[in-house]
Image 1 (tube, rainbow, N blue to C red):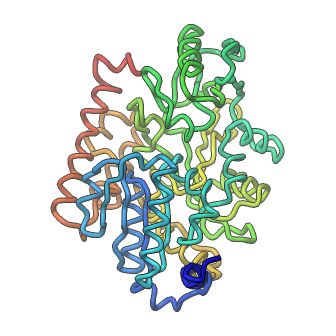
Image 2: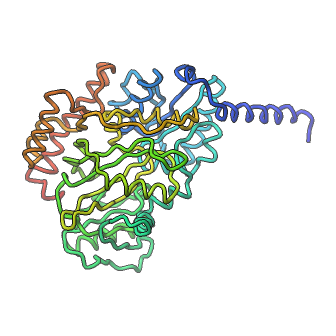
Image 3: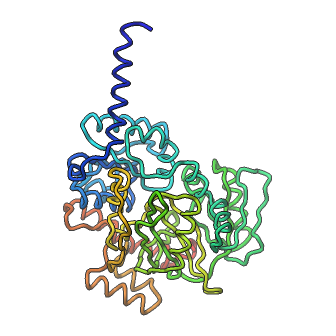
Length: 442
């Protein structure tokens, strides 16, 4: 080896040791406001929840990488926002993050990486071994993430531990010879991709997050469009569990390395988004500490050896009184601001665990809250249950209800764009729920 090459190799080895030591040695907690640098990939509602949690805990601004300029986030005074084309492609995201992490470490920072959305969480986990050379990465290893986020595997594990879920069949979209099978279920039924991250990249007509299917011909059309696309996983065909949006339950939880819960924060969904690309996203959540849901979720997490934050979607089945689990999200959910509203700074929980190695004990998530992405006008027109409607409207009056993009410490520009997002919900509900065209989306 030429002599002139040796200093470069030595420098690289020394740099690597310094970088690893920056991440492996726990800092003094009092230094985190000076040292911690959050980097957030993606810019949905959970992104702003992260931004607020990091700012409240440590007084730091977050670097946010978005594939587009989402102004309700980019205009925040607490954000360094950067638009990156093809951010959802590994060959763009990973080199960019590695370069950024190296620069941050050279500046004496402690980089902390989180993602918003299933595809970003999946990409970060898939490349965790590389990325954690530069960042603290609060995600489970990819083998486990890949297993439990495939809904076929999720339901198999539910069978193993005795957790109820809706009756389900799976159609192989990678098999061009496969034919449609509705499982003999009554219509309407539910159809949805088994892998939402892979579905993110597929292009199909009339794409929806979840399909409410009214007859066999409609199911065949959806299946054939997926067979013709790049999506090569399963299409889930599932019985429709009766009941409106108010029967949906949501649970966010964090378990430590021993499988013990740091927090478990439950809620009852009062209203969901009904736009095609956002079906199933909670629009209103109120507190509910449902012991059965918490016990089943904790049983699942301990069974698979889960460490970190997860989010479960569940529905109450009035036919037999069971709570049927739909899926696990291996990250804070889009609506994770409700955890902060309930009194738990989930970003601080992650930093305490991964950066400080700090034992936290059990945290209470019992502050009163109403999480809402819609204004009172939508509540009045969309929530049929009188008692629940009154409870939510009263929360607007007493200040308990909060829109996750509103924060009085942020600036006027961010508040303006957040308000546009908030009041745009009226036109969305008119189109997809109340108006004459709504039947085309049901």
